[in-house]
Image (tube, rainbow, N blue to C red; front, top):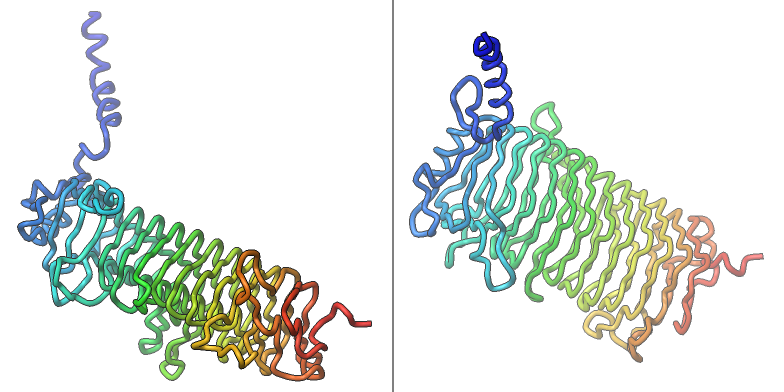
Length: 440
């Protein structure tokens, strides 16, 4: 009787045991697909000698929605792009490499194609992504394009990924809320490191990308490369990047409108925090056209061939730029060419216009901030536009802040300066009517 009493509890105990088992060990309900797939079980070559493209495709096909395709530590050569249209699918590696010179550690995906530089392309899927691996190109291969692509996706992700010696890094086009965390790009040879953009109008439909989130992004390249590290293109509605630093290359950030003739719309709601660059080849930041730009804690250092930051002639505003630090620009520290409703708070700009190639020493036109005549409703408050400690005799720009119009136009266009230290600049403000500090 006691045995029979406890025997009735066995089905319930078995059910509880099944629930307690790790999810990857259980088959998915319905089609028998597995939650956890190892590509080696489908014939992938972890030495890099053979082509792992067929095995990767079979593993993805065998995985369940919400499953994981695992690439153990090793090298995996891909001769073609792997397209992923499955939702909830994770491509998982076993580490993205060790310290410099030891990139063979962890999981390395090697793109071995002259036709395309793309390893994985996520298209029209939801909640899928890639994590914890490195992607590089095979020696001598010149396949163009981004190593990773997200196209028309919804909440897809890229996490803990190293992109080394690729053409371009990551291309995000159309879709909602792509999430990028801990992305490192080394030595790209193409036009951009990261590009975020919408494809524009197709018939009656407007294709855009919404609410892109980027955290902890870094890049490094040779001083003579022209790569634009981050390109925020047309048809972007909401973009945020936090904790980013780029060294070398062309520009750190380029915002552009695209082609208005085909219906492209300027990017809007651009947020940056703790964003910076050193030793870039051109301007540090160029915003050709955008609206509602909010930048905090920005630094630009030692870009000796261009201005620190440029707001273009087509810029529409609003811009709120707080705590920007610019040091060692070959051109002007900031060049405000156009726009309205621009607020610059607490800038610290020094050692600009030190390149005789761009601004000859006898021209006496180097500025901490140059404001063109068409700009309206601009305020600069606090901070300093002056030599920085330890910069030496060449640290002094000729003008602290220069407005291209006269005092009357400055007042009429609401271009005013207050509380800005311009010590040791021969001309602190020009015209003098820019300053509110001495108004009656």
